[in-house]
Image (cartoon, rainbow, N blue to C red; front, top):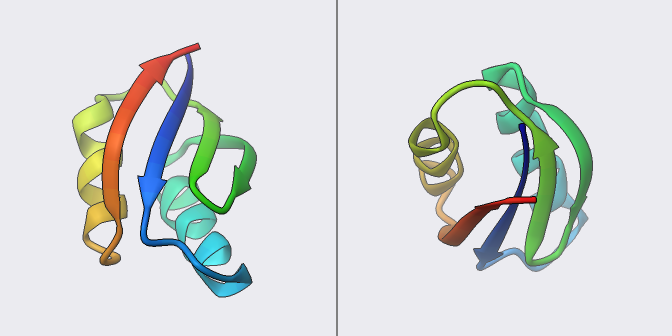
Length: 66
């Protein structure tokens, strides 16, 4: 399924790389990660994605199916 996550607290290219790597570590196929959001394909639980991103110190405001 395709999802879009709204993320607060990202401020630079390093933040984008950290979120991208966290998504890849879960097995997600990232489509686009930019400041404030990420779109990705994922077959697991969105709660796992939320936890992985929040473990980096960012706030996941919402994850919606796209």
